[in-house]
Length: 99
Image (cartoon, rainbow, N blue to C red; front, side, top):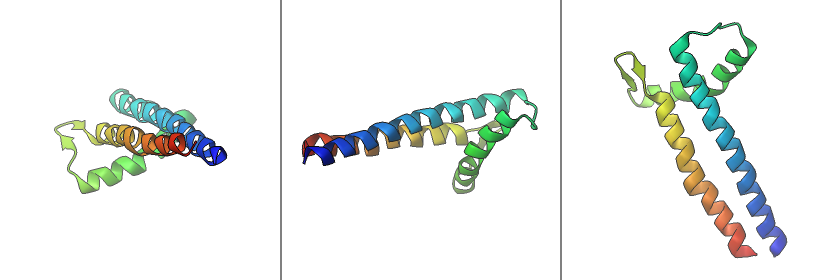
């Protein structure tokens, strides 16, 4: 049974790393929205492709614009933190209990 517990713990760890990285990508996108970078830069395009579809969906559900400030990246960051603290922690806890 310890093998299944280790599998759950490993999956939780990897998902947590991916969500940590995505959190910083969202943060980078928010900073990029303030400075007007070159839209043809491949790094900028990749960051926008990773973040913009989700922030667009959030903006369609909840009005996130307050003047010139868009709160959709902040809401997306809160969702990522919630997933890390609740779902990933639950998977890790299940892995620890199975051991």
